[in-house]
Amino acid sequence: MNDWIIYGANGYTGELIARAAVAAGLRPRLAGRNAAAIRTLANTLGLPFTICRLEDREGLHQALQGAQVVLHCAGPFQETSAPMVEACLQTGVHYLDITGEISVFEAAAKQDAAARRTGVMLMPGVGFDVVPSDCLAAHLARRLPEATSLALAFRTFGSISRGTAITMLTMTTRGCERRNGQLIITPPLHEVRMFDFGRGPQPCVSIPWGDVATAYYTTGIPNIKTFVAIPRRAQRWFSLARQLLPIVQLPTIRAGLRHLLARTLHGPDATTRATGRSIIVGEVTDTTGRCATSRLTCPEGYTLTVQTALLIVQRVLNGHTTAGFHTPAGLYGPDLICEVPGVTRSDE
Ligand SMILES: NC(=O)c1ccc[n+]([C@@H]2O[C@H](COP(=O)([O-])OP(=O)(O)OC[C@H]3O[C@@H](n4cnc5c(N)ncnc54)[C@H](OP(=O)(O)O)[C@@H]3O)[C@@H](O)[C@H]2O)c1
Image 1 (spheres, rainbow, N blue to C red):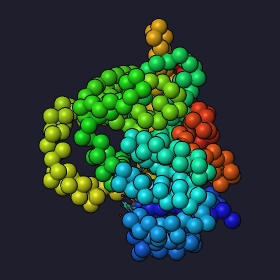
Image 2: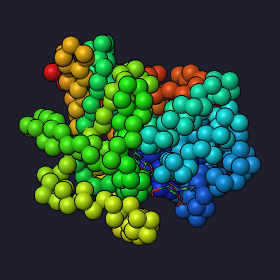
Image 3: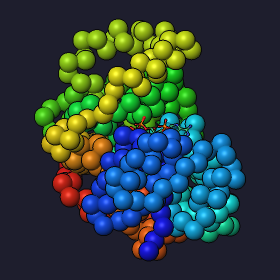
């Protein structure tokens, strides 16, 4: 029997993945720092469990012994991924996570040589960000191999979990895009641009989404920007929200907001997860002005995260791994996302 671990299994997304894994006939070992919550969930699902803190280096190494792969679901990952990556490299366990944070991808990319040496695969970003968008970027690069610029825009329907909200709060301090292959820090939410998600142009604002890091490794395209649709009901308030950003960045306000989000957000309910949709539009251009646009319509973001994470876990358990740092589409190709039920892709 394959031994694999979901760390942070008691979180909103970790629990969804654990339940879906069991429904798919898999038997992950549940892990995390919250003994009561992990034990209760493991007993409910009839799964083995391990309690360990990320700060306990030895305990973490021990917990990973014998496992084939860890699916790390405890975020924000800029606070949690480094000790888990280190433990995976030390114990020869493959590492997957569901981050969408640029700094986490870049840190994992820097461990490429160490991962190759130890025969470990490091693949952050096996959730909604970045699997579909990474596949879309790779598909567009396939359509226009000379592309020099890529823009990706996301539109999701439905609410977000507290973990996502807290992680997104960390993204409001500054923007980031890729120019000539380099990561460039920009003011937060600084560019507004129109994208068509299928019902005419809609305003979208630049955000530092993980693809600024990953799409470069997948496609080699040197200029990359990522955007998110401004919901129609929020468009009136958008200018005001932008003006308030400096206040949100004050440490005491941020701490208060983080506390508030942790207490009030519970994530989308089962109906929203079953009926919601997400749409990603990608555009590439080359230096002669040629361009290509493609669009992916996908299940709701958390539903898709569960599907893509388990799809990739199963690949790893089946031995489809390569040592080193990899992006999802970089290793498994642009059509990986088409294996997920409910996903459609169209080209313009
Ligand atoms: N890329 C994507 O598409 C995607 C999709 C879904 C989620 N995510 C990301 O996944 C993360 C989790 O989201 P969520 O909705 O599941 O959040 P959540 O419900 O708040 O759960 C967070 C989990 O992380 C654990 N955790 C947090 N900090 C930890 C630390 N320092 N050490 C050990 N465990 C720690 C928590 O454990 P305790 O209970 O002990 O606090 C809990 O198990 C977020 O960063 C979110 O942005 C990404």
